Length: 113
Length: 110
Image 1 (cartoon, chains in turn cyan, yellow):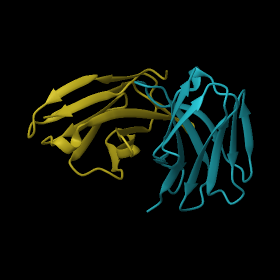
Image 2: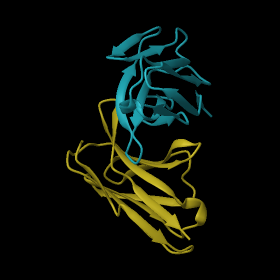
Image 3: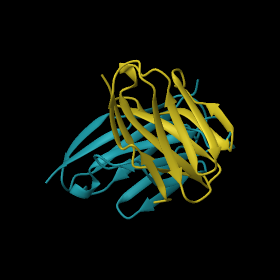
Image 4: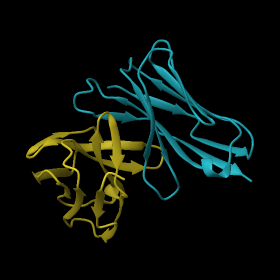
């Protein structure tokens, strides 16, 4: 079945350093979504990318969707302690009609002040 | 936060006992989902619903059943809990393409 792989699983950075997490799908995705989960919290939707090669920015966060729509990345510039948490990518499982998402395993970011 | 609540928030139970988790939403969204979250596995879909009495299986549905008799409530039942079902359970609703999650239920099966 469809799989979404995410690397790395963990990342420790010094505050101010950059951070990138990568997401790869075994099949072409209609779109890719990114979620953030703070420690002890629930996942929160960040963004959705739909177009091949699409790049979107939210302040220090840059999201990219690959040309083949099989991979995506999230880059954080100059990390802050508020960036701590687990970042998940997710793609629709087959048709988007059901809204079923396949999530990557997540990348947990720790930021040392 | 899309008006989603889950109950109970924490539960400890023993192997072999039945357990029901409740998800309640206040915004009349058609689609609702139950996920479990385990270290190293991310979020895995258990069951989902696309309307009252309309449900379907996700990727890890064995040992779980669901019911949706009202739009606002989606129940997840573990007929006979096992230690492998110790996990954090999240309910979610779909608004457009986005999913909004409830606060989660931490279930421990001893």
